[in-house]
Amino acid sequence: MLLMALLTWGYGAHTTAVAQVAGANQADPIVVADCRLADYLPLLDGKRVGLLTNHTAMVEGTHLVDTLLSRGVRIELIFAPEHGFRGRAAAGELVRSGYDQHTGIEIVSLYGRNKSPKANDVFRCDVVVVDLQDVGVRYYTYLSTLYLMMQRCAEVGVPMVVLDRPNPNGMYVDGPIIEQEHRSFVGMVPVPVVHGMTLGELARMINGEGWLEGGIKCPLTVVPCLGYRRSMRYEPPVAPSPNLPNIKSIYLYPSLCYFEATEVSIGRGTDRPFQVVGHPRMRELNTTFTPASCEAAKHPTQEGKLCKGAYLGDRSADRILAEGINLRYLVDAYNQLGAREDFLSPYFEKLIGVGYVREMLRSGYSAAEIEAVWREDVELFKQQRQKYLIYEE
Image (cartoon, rainbow, N blue to C red; front, side):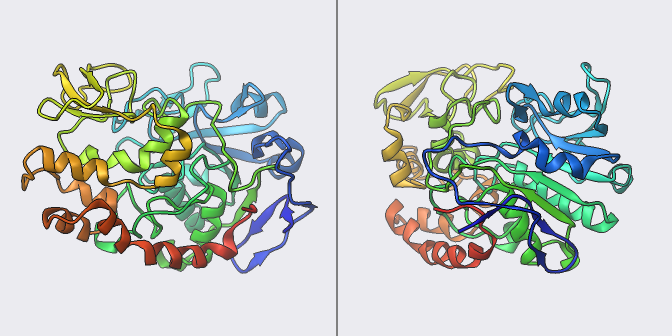
């Protein structure tokens, strides 16, 4: 398959691109899109540029903002997602708008009072450039922020350029497709929990499937990575958010985030976030830990309490990835803590995206039996997404 150097989608049909490059050899180094300056700088020449970006947007050791400024690009404003432009805000912490201390450029928060960009802000831009390191999980909010930006760009007629990055969980697809009744900011598009796509591919799919409100389409150009295949192991050089500090936490995230709807700690407020599971009343399998409030986790679950449980970070990457979404951790914790009716808060449905998992858990089904229910969702989605994929397996 040929990878297109630039993939453009206007208001109408998908248009082929400016130039082509041969399918990348797996031994070749990965070149993330923001390093392909010659391919996208002409799209920004003489334009007022809005950047939807954060701390992960590094161009060979220099932030994209500084790189563009050094080449004379006019940056009108920066849109900041969850965790803020510098990536330091804790999960769920509101991010304030303001000005970047280094450059003086205005920063508009999309994780404060407004999660959807205002039309007036987008209208100040001639083009919006997106450069974010995603982790390939539906409830990771960078995807929702991309969706809302596409919606606004489509409404006001401002084109978007997505500088693509590899998906560290891009090797597989798993989990149920979200039901409309459970749609929220942690699940805005009807994809499985682990979708196996990059943000660039997802942007193409959002347009192509008519998922924006009113079926409108965002004027879209995707600049692909080079040398990337979906089957590759890719470890982001910069942690995408404070509580996903390493590749093990990123691999375990699709299996552990459901505990956010419980009183069980998954290591926020420790040096092993998303690598441990524990509670004061759980059995000690191979670890104990005491969550403490810190910059990355303000008042974490079970703060100041000794938790007993399991450390999962010592498992091999091969094992974690082979298991995919593993609900056994959730089922075991549910059974250990007395199978209480209030074990799961209503937030659980927003994360998992469907109602039947709670009911099956209460009815005593095993993790394997629950996971088997969504296999048809996975196969149907793999077929549905095929025409939007940019990268080879």
